[in-house]
Image (cartoon, rainbow, N blue to C red; front, side, top):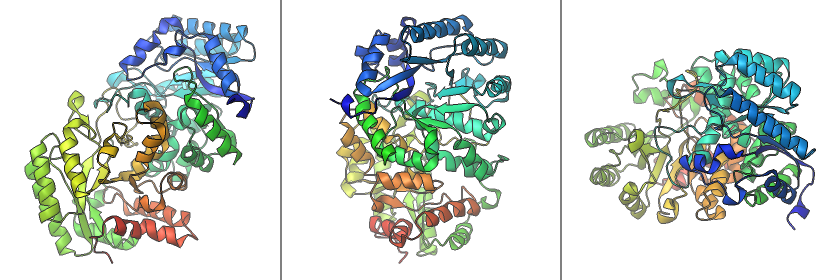
Length: 577
């Protein structure tokens, strides 16, 4: 019945095959993912049944990005021969992207590319987002891989990039949020950003690169990279960086939602959007809603403080605020500090507010969140005595394997108190180091931008807390549909409803594509204006402010709401007007 509603000429460019030797279920369990039991052991017939149900004529097979490790050159050849045999056995139903071994062995990889494309007639080459481990790992734009890119460019080859399953020092935040749910799409984004800011994408324009999962969060964070990497010394202009991001192809696996597809339609030309499923890594039934949405929509920490902002003083911000037309700024330091330091910072923030009445308010800084007594004491002091607007929190606290996200049980007393007070929380992504791979490039930000931990039911348990997510939620609106489908704990609609209950501010994110997506995702009164000053220059903040104004040109009501009125409704104690 479902298949009758579908276009019967689909080509699925993201379709895996699982040779028995992969031990896929065991591998996935180690990174927080449960491979559907009905898809194992995998056979072509399992895929064909799903393809028929989903109206897919042809699937392009690829090996999972984590399938090959180290210098196992023979394994790559065996897997490619196996994929070629499947294609010959089912002509017209399967094609394949060939895998290669570690890119550090360029001569071997070049031989594998030639054999796969010339002899086996592969449709292209599948690459992981990075190769190697620890500090020796390198993303795809590294100069050591130029020889490989030169050959791919000469051949005008198709390359399919899939994020690797790289753990961070902070463990994945919840049982329902394993590496494939949140980290894999981020790795795709890091690889894409690395290819752009290193100039590799521009140097080899004949390679047609497909990014898995709509690029992870690439369309949502591309404008952020364009501004921040330029500030950090990238020789490309804002426009050139965005142009290079738009030259990728993007496939829809586990990402086809009204919000994400609206953003993609705004970001790239229609012929750069491809269909994908990620089967058999996920259940066929997960794609049904997304396939229909796809049809419907298409038919319809390398960072440095600017030198002129250090040391900071209120007058520096006031000067920038005057230039940007900002009447009131809510100050925050979104990281946990020792209890004594938190008290000192909050008293200092309140003195700035009192000295420059109407010019500043502040979100209170919190002690280390594992110290429940100190946290509850500081909440009471900051809100009752200092009359802070709300509380600023980082996305996680602690270090290494002891780190925890703020949805962890240890934070329950804090959330209960904030809920009792109906408090406002400003949530900013932390900057935990990446244990497996150093920062993509000294020119790119190490901002993690994880989706907030909502799939553990925290939002339902503490609905009176009004949470503001910085930077339009990082990539939350873009990855929320993926989390809703893959975590599938409370039910897809409930999870999306909780994501939409957040407030989202525009700092370093006010770009046509991101604003189009967020408009589709939340109600207009949940959008707030932000600048991230003084961590950025006045010019950078102004570029985004100008984008916001141009986006809302002719819609003065919604522009005024975003710029000030929504904040006044959310925080009535603001003294701006």
